[in-house]
Amino acid sequence: MSKVLVTGGTGYIGSHTVVELINEGFEVVIVDNLSNSNVEVLNGIEKITGVRPVFENIDCVDYVAMDNMMDKYGEIDAIIHFAASKAVGESVEKPLLYYRNNLVSLINLLQLMPVHKIKNFVFSSSCTVYGQPDILPVTENAPIKPALSPYGNTKQIGEEIIRDTIYANPTNYQSIILRYFNPIGAHASAEIGELPNGVPNNLLPFVTQTAIGIRKQLQVFGNDYDTPDGSCIRDYIHVVDLAKAHVVAVKRMLTGKSKDSLEIFNLGTGRGLSVLEIIKTFEEVNQVKVPYKIVSRREGDIEKVWADPTFANEVLGWKAVETVEETLRSAWAWELNLAKLRN
Ligand code: UFG
Image (cartoon, rainbow, N blue to C red):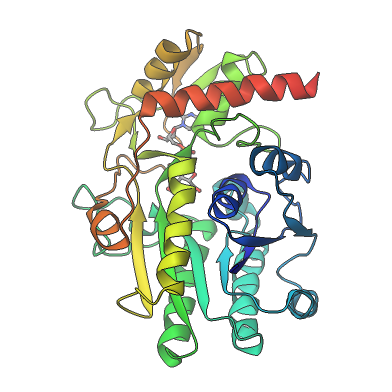
């Protein structure tokens, strides 16, 4: 059985990926410092899969603790590195926290890989590296635009660190960088999902929390963009589709199918939806109202971006299959289940 180290494995995308890894017969070791997640996520994973993954409460910034952890678990076949800070606004206020958390942890892992004979590395990157692309849909060959926040910059620099490290030593390392578009939704069981701390920054948790009455009103940031209804457009992808791509990526490296020691794939659906379309569809499929008002634009927002997923579809052999209706249903089912868990 191959063993995968998943950093950030109790987080939103991490926990869904752990479920898919276990379903595919992988042994999983989770490392997470619980800075933006809850240890009870392990109960949800266990309920879904029947397996409670090994969990270590460690900060990836701590080199010695990571080194000891790797000694303890012996042979690790691949690392999937999710652990990172990801709030754009907070990163503007606390840039050093972001550079430290996101880059030191990455450097630690890359340094520890040859020490522990770990060859395969999957990295969570973001469509943020494209900024506002000149051509849509955006392919992996689109130019990297200057980052609009320290958070975005950590993803760009992170990609560069990986590239330089791999190309300096392609026999010891191989990596797949996955550039996510906007993950939303939750596992079909509603046992795990997105659980933001405090007031959500992202659209979908704000929508579900407004629909259930935790928030009074959703603010739609701008309706004067150059889009059909004036609100911003994104490529919203079901988190389970996204999670499955990680399993495909790990298998690709383990079976020697990578065409290069470094490969980069867009993970999106290829379909762009506006904020107002998301709200309307959410209301329709769930038969629930989402009170909202249009307010001014949010600083730093991209007007429109959606993926060209052809390269991932054809070369990685992965495709997003969930409909947006099903995805929005799953987000609501999770919010309803959370309400039960809270009571
Ligand atoms: N939005 C609202 N109201 C809200 C929240 C969001 O109208 O309360 C809108 C935003 O303006 C945007 C869309 O919903 O048009 C999506 O916003 P999110 O915050 O959910 O997602 P972003 O596309 O802004 O952010 C994503 C990732 C970040 C990453 C960023 C880079 O979540 O991690 O892309 O562009 F940094």
